[in-house]
Length: 325
Image 1 (cartoon, rainbow, N blue to C red):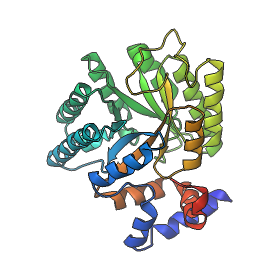
Image 2: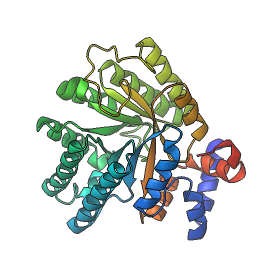
Image 3: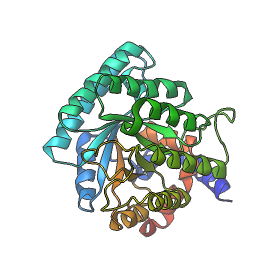
């Protein structure tokens, strides 16, 4: 029933005029400009949240476009420092040219991550569809091999390969691995991905357990209560949690501006009450803050690729008091 309703909401929304999509997306996208993103982060900083900033846009057709993203992220970095925000960066590797020219794309990514390191800032390489899963992981490993360690990747619970990827990264990075783990928004073929909600949640929970046992830093990006509950259970089992030092003997050294081995992460505008509840319990919570001129394309893509967002859209429209950002 929920799945059918979500698909109906999505099908209706993507056919609405652009102004209506803008009205819906303003809850989930900070705005078109960097100033909009700064304004949102300042507001949520009063709640104790921290952030990861994403300039909207991904796969590009020319390296000139990659230059735009590199320069814009350097502006983001300056703004974070100027306003003393507790924030790091999330980037799409394909927006930096990784699929057009892997060498040039890596050079762009390296430039940004090195600059971020000078400011004590972390950079997350977002995970896109399966075409770039291996390349994204290898980019992280290449940077770590060069001593550039303020970088980590995202793994998607829905992919069949994820547990193997965790083992591969553990073998290379040990406790220095730093993940965002999510269910994954890209609807991949069933030959490489779980497709049912229960299977995806179970696989995501298995990945979370594996990451914690490997000593990695784990950013649990979820709005699903079963995943939150599983994470809390693993934390209790491993004697980790708010106010406690990370007790895992295989964990890497403490990371600046991070939690004690873990944190929870959520999209801007989604399940604000759950985020505030976790924050009130002492858990570090990070809000994903996207902004940019590509807000329309981002909004439509997320709706099409993950129809379950339709439930959140409908709830925000019909009962806005239940889901304050």
